[in-house]
Length: 164
Image 1 (tube, rainbow, N blue to C red):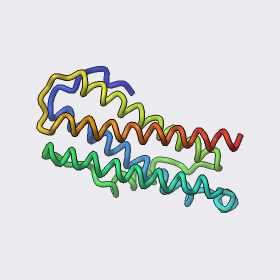
Image 2: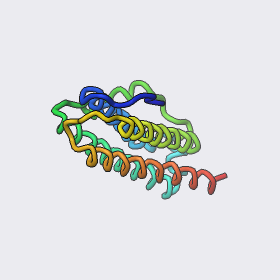
Image 3: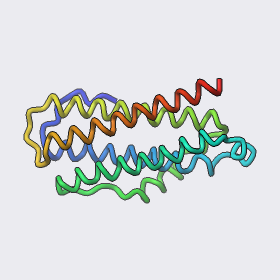
């Protein structure tokens, strides 16, 4: 996903932050449901490293969502409730069939989130617009989230390498 432009208004910034919230809600929901959705034989075969990875991914996405929601609140806007996105995820996505499917899905989620934040940072930095929220606080939050997503990509890739 490439934003390909500058963020030029509070309205546009709000919409992009809301997209980030939805992205985090999807990642959180998927990570939380992966273990429960696997067939019983696969579920018991999941090692502790993968279990911890999924639990941490869900917690991290919840934290990212809350941090983005705080920025959106400062812009005096609203977000979509997690419960609504969670219901959509349940209805939309079929469960992975095995452990490898869980890892590939988690890697794709982490990479998508990293790229989104990378593009959003570029678009905010390219803008000379004045926002209703502090630009330094906005960028600091986005930098931190992007770095955590990068670490998530690296962690999943490392686990996948060990399993190969």
